[in-house]
Each structure stands twice: as structure tokens, then as C-alpha cells.
Image (cartoon, rainbow, N blue to C red; front, side, top):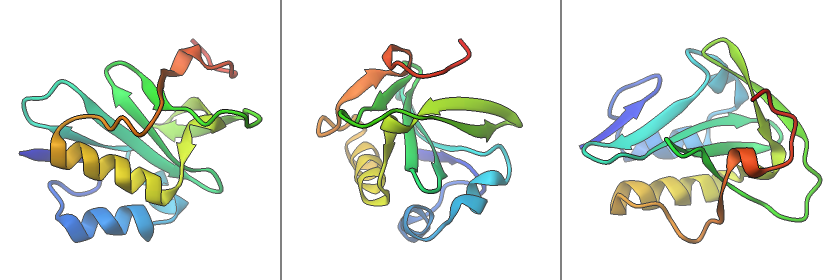
Amino acid sequence: MIVYNGPVENPGEEFIKNIFFEKEADYWKQGSGDSCFEVEGEDEWLIFFYDEPYGFFIMRHPDYLVPLKKDIEIETIEHLVGGEPMKVPSCSYVSREEAYRIVQHFLSTKTMPDFVEWVDLYDIDFEHDF
């Protein structure tokens, strides 16, 4: 079973497409400010949220692994999660299409895709409060 922790529980395929291709940044400001997919019986989750104009931030939990886009200037982006600011690097945001591809791979194979370079969030040089 796949569990979606967000504004609705256990959405269908159309709902998943809708949140990745139709929902704007305001959608991600409601509730806790983030969502996640977890596969029952697996240890990893995908936590994600959206910020304009950067795109989707996706993190593998519990290892804090994020996508890395090389050769771009890194900005520190602040997103409210549970009412608290979470600082993340701009180089870890992906497009709507790539976010959807990552999630589809995870949901269909129950594994993390290897078409993404995953790095530890705190190995990236950005302004974090850790």
C-alpha cells in the first residue's frame, strides 16, 4: 500500500498528476507546508513541497538525501514546514516534470531512481541552521 501524507489520504493517479502539474505555491502553504509518499513496509519516504520560481524540493527521508544540480549559484530558500522555517538550497529543486518522474519511479518500483544524483543535504554549502 502507498500512503500519501498531505491534504488528502491515499490519492489516485489523477490527484498525483494534479498536485505536480496544476497546484501553485499557495497549495503548499496550507496545512504543514509539505507532503510525503511512503510505501508501507519500506524505510524510505519522499518528502516534497513546491516554491515559485524554483520548483519542487524533494528529500529522501530518513537520510536527508536531495537531488543536486551542479554549476548553478546556490541560494538559501526558506519554506515553512509545520510553521517553522526550513532552509534548503536552490540547487536541490527540480522541475514539475522531474519531480513527477521521481515520484512515479518511487511509487511503481518502491526504489529511489538512479537517474537523479542524490547527495546529503548538509554536504551542500548553503546557509542552514544545523
